[in-house]
Image 1 (cartoon, each protein chain N blue to C red):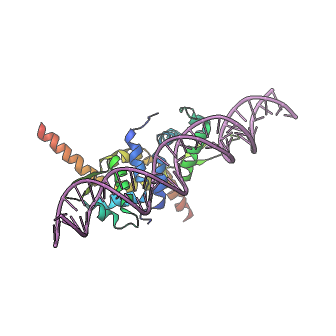
Image 2 (image 1 turned 60 degrees about the horizontal axis):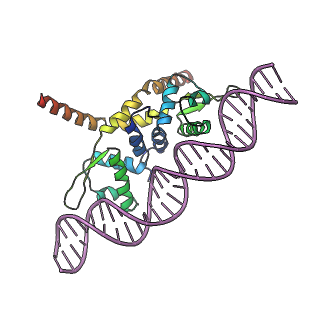
Image 3 (image 1 turned 120 degrees about the horizontal axis):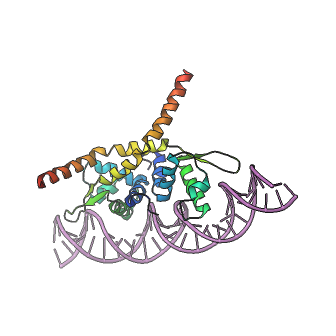
Length: 108
Length: 108
DNA sequence: CCTATATAAAACTTTCTGGTTATGAAACTA
DNA sequence: TAGTTTCATAACCAGAAAGTTTTATATAGG
């Protein structure tokens, strides 16, 4: 059917997991190795490696090489596509929030 | 683990499917029945019903009642949560786009 | 050369997803 | 009352996702 940009599928899917969102949040502070990224989670290292692969396929991280380490770096460009898609609905939710505001004002 | 709002999981997951994004786009134009929503797709009606249930659980649609019809209406509020989360990365992608712009300028 | 560290890859299990067909319920229509 | 439309539900299936443990590979450092 292909009605929207193909890459939105993988970007939104990548964002649908809390572990992966946490990894992205962590990477906002700068590069990190796999072990560093895995540390906050009570999950095996291969599991984290899999999450990283999902993020990589979505274009949300790139990986360098530092000896035996494979440092991960955030690549935020695909998030722009996602945000652009969502922006089209800003009016819709703002309208309903305004409606709510009006209601609350009336109650006062 | 629960590091981010629980509802982002279901919202992003709902958005990860092109059929569901198309349905939301359609609903921006106003209410629609299940049959109307199913019409553009070469997919069975139960398949569409399932997609609608996913959207409903994510809070992205609400359903009314008109005789035997169950009209769907867009509910955009959850998209605000998703957008808010993404906004935190705006700086990151804008920086890289600026970097690209600079590069293109140099090439000129 | 040997060992420890960092990561990937393989094999497996369980659960989720997205589709199907078949059936059923509710409400309109003749 | 009988038939049609609209939609949901159930049962099923194939493939993807998310985790596990185990094994392999590359590199650093004594």
